Length: 399
Image 1 (cartoon, one colour):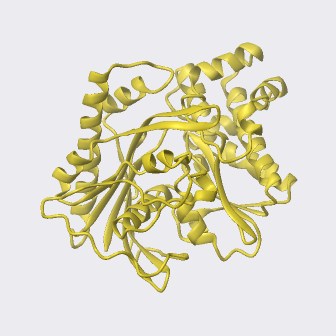
Image 2 (cartoon, rainbow, N blue to C red; image 1 turned 90 degrees about the vertical axis):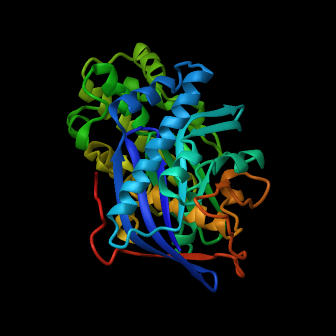
């Protein structure tokens, strides 16, 4: 079955798209990568998304329009990538959408909202669409995140010692796969969210391209201490967070307590705080190997800080490219897998990771152009995943 997975992360750069051929045999799911792409948002649409993210407020009319506009953008991205395939074929679209709010109260997620109307995606592609994947996990008492833990667990399940998959998006989230314990997954703290906020506040664009400024700065110990004095960092898993907590006002408050004038020093200190928080969680769970992915992997200053801090806790650093999962496309591939599991009546949750009451089939299904015909449920539980690289270069690297 050919599945198109799509997600836009908290950095709101665009739609990450992955096309994957998926099949299962005797509990092993085979993921054949076909194509990956990042389709940038129109600048106006990106500004509209950023305008509704916390701590901003909005109204229902704006959210309604944004839901439809994002749906059309996701649909166009899927259509564009499918049309560029040699055979132009796909069977199912899985759309995570754009998270605009993730409500946490006293450590428990009470609501989560992803926009990107799936009916618009179905109209654009003519294909059935699995969407709204986080809500069922939340309804079952889970954090609704990080759902990528399902892919991490299946790919890393044969590790002989504890290994962690680290995704460096707006938030740094970890999946800890231990051969002797249930899988854990949780948000470790902020990553690009505060780095990008520092760039925007300085009027220097929305990200530090390649980490040039971050790598050139000097860590300020006073600001580092303020950033690390954060109860979320010390809280045990399961836990999740987002821009509801880590936004421009959060950074402004930290800088008011410990002023740092130079932008490069601010960025270096923020990166150091990410590295310290990640290394502390790695130490707590006895992890010996960290496999990184996400946009933060391209920030040389952040990666240098991570490598140094992980070495202090006897852990090694590598990227997901080395296990067949592209650093920029891994999450889209994960959601393609989650939608495929839903399509086949299989659970996408890892209850030990999200804190849900039990395994749940995730998401809602919107029919495509034809009648909805679901296959028979899988006849064996999925225990492991094998990822194969494309037989030819992906249709798009970046569009």
